[in-house]
Length: 113
Image (cartoon, rainbow, N blue to C red; front, side):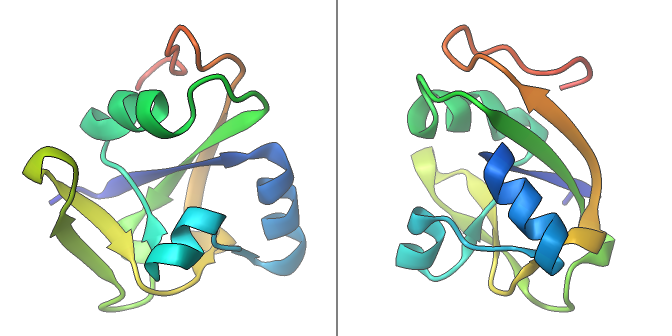
């Protein structure tokens, strides 16, 4: 479907991931049994719906090719769109780029997104 997918998390979660080698599931991820990810076209909706008003966020660009084999599934979610869901840990080695998202309220994304 695409070579790069995205994860939004806190700066603290990214720091923890860098220390242990993988991103720990958020509370929503743990509840649902997979790590929620988005395509570039889904990012604005994800930010608005799940991160409105939050600060100290980072956007992780994740290489699909670096994820554990067969752990990524494209499943219908919001409005029937297919979203990438990762049924495994997200290794730091799969993160190819990080970008600060300082203020979600105006739904500003870093250049290129």
